[in-house]
Image (cartoon, rainbow, N blue to C red; front, side, top):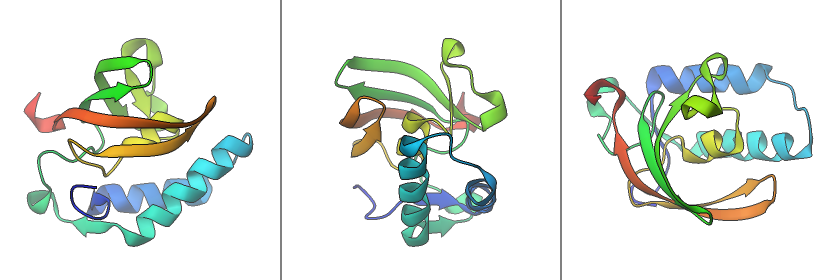
Length: 131
């Protein structure tokens, strides 16, 4: 992990904590990924907007990732109500969305997905205000 811990912008941190406290689990996979994300948030470095590194995945970041299925380009991390996989908009409540938040370009993440534990690498991150 490039920065040692997740890096989360303070308003996004508050939103995520509130969301994860309210959201219900539809299945065991969701319970596992939400529990892990909550645990990671307890160790996260919370930063102000101006302190946020440009290469950290956050809401509305455009991300390229290397997966076991190939490189996936141009996925945007969004709030649940804005998610649409056909438009490459990943909800934070999907396994991939919750895996990426707070990690940086170059980080390799091992995360639980519907077909088992997989490793993904963040190839590129474009900040939401840069696109």
